[in-house]
Image (cartoon, rainbow, N blue to C red; front, side, top):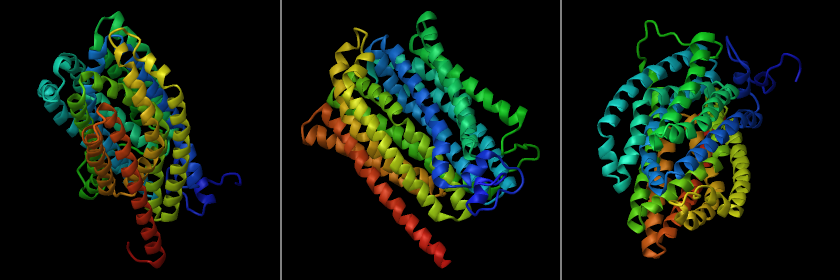
Length: 475
C-alpha cells in the first residue's frame, strides 16, 4: 500500500465522504482483514468480561447452591433487559454501518441520534414494569425457595436499567463505525472493576447476591461514563450527536426497527428458552439442576467469547458491504469468519473437555455446592460439542442483521432456540428416558441442527443476491 492510501481505496472503493477514521477505512477495505482487525479487540474484551462472569459465579458459589440457583433464575430476566438494549444497539449499529458503506455521514449521525432517543423511551417503560412485577416473575418461574435471593439480585439490576441500556447501545455505535479498540477499552474497564468489587460487596460489605448485582452496576456505569466522554465531551468519534430540533424520521425508524425489533425478540426468545429449560430441569430434577445449568452456561459464555467478537465484526462488515452493494464481500466475510470461529471453538471445546473436572471444582468448593460437581462435570463435557457448531448459526444470524434482514435472523434463532432445543430436551429426557443428561444432550442437538440450517439459508440468500446484482435485477 502506498503512503496515504487507505484500505478502502486499495480495494477499489472510494473513501467515505467527509469525516473519516481508521475504523471506517477498515470497514470499507479487505473483508478478511476487517474480520481479524475488528474481532480481536472485542474477543479480548469479551474474554475478560466473561472471566469476570466466572469470577462472579465463583464468589456467589461461596454462598451456597441456593445462591447459584437464584442467579440461574435471575438470568432469563436480566437477559430480557439486555435483549432490548442489544436489539436496539444492533439495529442502530447495523443501520450506521450501512450508511457508512453508502458514504452518508449525515445519515449515520441521524441514525445515532434516533437510537439514543429511542433508548431513553424504552428505559422508562422497562424500568417501571420490571420493578413493579419482579416478585411475580420469580414466583411463577419455579424459583421456589430461592425466590427471595433472586428478587434481591434482580431489583438492583432493574433499578439500574438506564446504565445498562446506555452502555450497551453506546458500545454498539462505536463498534458500528469500526472502532473496536475503544469498544474494547470501555468493556475492559468495566470487567476489571467488577472483578475487584465483587468480593468487597458480597463478603466485606455482607450484601450477598445483592452485592454481586451492585458491583456489576457500578462497573458498567464506569464503562458507560468513558463512552459518554468520547461522544459528548471529546467528540472524536465518527458519528456526531445533534439533539436540537430533533424530530423522528419514519425512514430512519424503519431502518433501525427492521433489524432492532427482530434482534430484541430474538434475544428475548433466548431468555424464554432459558426459562423453559429451567422449568424442564426442575421437572426432571430439582433446583440443583438449575444451579448446574446456570453455572455451566456461564462457563459457556467464556467459551463462545471469540464467536461474539467475530459476530460483532460480521454485523458491521456485512452492513457496510450491503451499503456498497458488494455482496461478494459480504459472503467472503461470513465464510471466513465462520471458518475461523469453528476452528477456535473446536480447540476451546477440547480444552474444556480435558479439564472439565477441574473447572467444575472451582465452582463447587463450598460445602453447600460440592454435591453438584459430578453433574456439572458431565454438562461441561457434553457442551464441548455445542461450541464449534454454534459458529455456523451465530455468525449467519449476524450476517442477516448486518444485511438488514432482521426477520430472517429472528426466524433462524426461534427455530434453533425456542423450538428445537426444548423439543430435543424433552424428547431425550422423557421419551428416551435419559433424565437430566437428556436435557443437556437436547441443548446440543437443537443447537447443531438449527445452526446448520441457518448457515445454509444465509449461503442461498447470498448466492441469490450476487446473481441478482450481476444481472441488474432483484433477488
